[in-house]
Length: 109
Length: 114
Image (cartoon, rainbow over all chains, first blue to last red):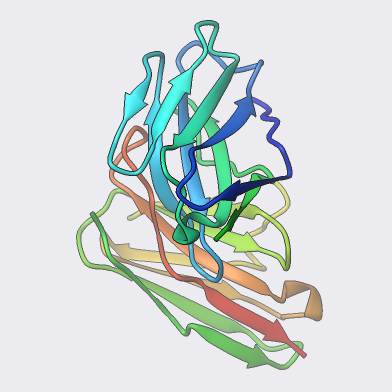
């Protein structure tokens, strides 16, 4: 499994964009990059995943570096409900979801 | 999407006893997983629950301590056996339809061993 490095914590102001970085320099060529988040007292929930191209969905955007050694999850307008721990997880076809420590995002009103 | 119901949502148990946690999904799913989340920590995968075969355990977890059943495509149980205070954690069930699809998680079972 590829090792990931994420900041322990980040702060954002409400309604401002947030860029959550993740380094995964040992990622395999066929590993997808998955992002999940865990709100307080809840199970994790899926945010987005991608392989090479940037991806968008209703929750967020995922920007993947050309060499795939890093990626950035972008929340376009943070809300108080986005306060959570965000996990970046490289995952191959035979692999399981292995959670690292993640980034704890705080959102200030 | 999949809706997962875990029971119980929380429990306080005496050391040396066992607790069985149930995970019910509202649709048939291929892959079911059990995770543990110790206080203030990230999630750790315990095992993959395979329908019709033995569960596959991750390093550090053994069947005698965490027996798992998967009798059909919508249900699984995890038993925490011979509990000690170190087993106090949140236990979560997760399901997926495939590796490249999203995983869904239950709300977890908060276990306290006294």
